[in-house]
Image (tube, rainbow, N blue to C red; front, side):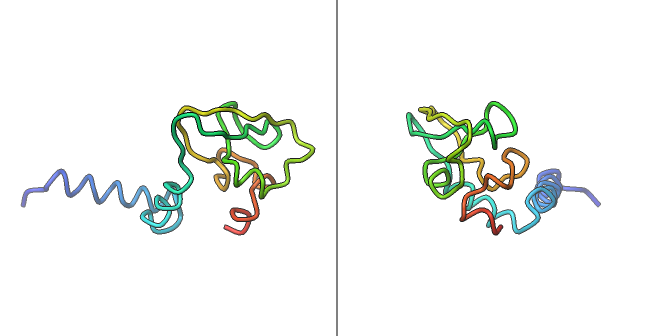
Length: 102
């Protein structure tokens, strides 16, 4: 019996994604893809909520969050994705109303 390395890798990768996302990886990745931006889009860096210096959120998440009295700045991002809803990058109390219930 021979093992197809590509099939074995794909199976391991899929299982790892299930562990990472805690849900169907296709659904989680589709949600992430909606929150990506590119060349010179505006993003917000909230020092109060971000867990490291690279954490940023999109305009929509910032406006639907509670950051009024936080230490934040507006930045022009080259490329990236919104960290709102990701508790490994952003404090849950800083999630916007769309991500707070997830």
